[in-house]
Length: 150
Length: 282
Image (cartoon, rainbow over the protein chains, first blue to last red):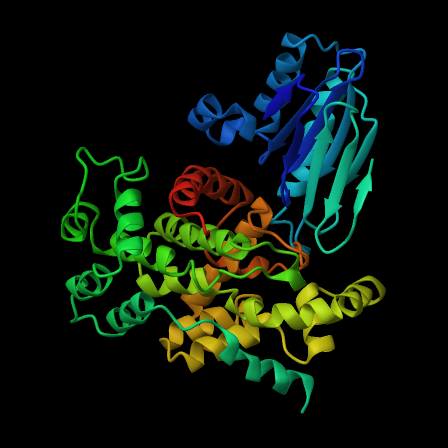
């Protein structure tokens, strides 16, 4: 998890797999952040959630927004983009971490009335996401394919 | 010459196999030999020795005092764990070059392989299996075929991607159809050519098709499962993405649930970052 107001910075998280990258940006104060979480629910390991809350959607996402608020970002202005949540070709339902990660995020956003401006989720590809803090531009690179701005 | 024959000939382009791993293979095949044999070989390689000691002294093991020599490390962390470290460090040079065809920078495939190898220990422990160096090695080398196939995938990536899109097949099926051979089969040929134990050859060969393996089912299924979990984490993930088939039978056979997969990912997180920091491929 990284949150910054430094206009010289570009935040990047590589190769998301079934993980989710959440990008937030407040264009007025030019504060942005990037959260890379791996799993939907912290109940799987309470001790891990204490030492690394960023690993889980339910503990990581609320803290992530709070970190941005500390730097002057405001909820009503924050733009949210979501990337990742891929899956292997599973028809047996054992390896649904990507879908579960995405569902956990939608649930948290629904409860807290957060709208998602853009998303590139699902499928079975690896994605890398980055945000340029000076402009708030967000790029998604799909491994083996090109880079797009979202 | 057919394309698949040309690909098989390219096996010779791989860098020479590290003597450390060769010796480790001999150990795996001959249980009567001692860990001291491996220590005797690697102590003359200062770079490997230094990295092995750094990892032994890292938070990964949480030893109460520092170890200064491989002999001491052997006593403090035990034979199996020392062998794991040596294999992990020894494999750095095999995965040295970038895999452009899979859109992987230098060291990325090594990171994926290390994640898979660490998972093999985590999953085996949950299943109450004895820690076997052959399982760890197979997990570490399961994608070795990509190191050779990468150049060919690079030339034919558009064809592979088109096939995936038009026929809805997995990456490995498209790889095999376009190139005449896939990275798992090629990996099997490489490890066979290197005269590795057959358990390792089987696990590498069938790591995407465990139901086709005729023997060594435990090793094959373990490596298959660990590879899937490593893919889910995205560590060292490339152009092939997660485009591989799932075999629920393996989960059912060992009575594993989705929550177990998530617990394995949690356990991997700490271990992987420690190993990655200390031994990151240069």
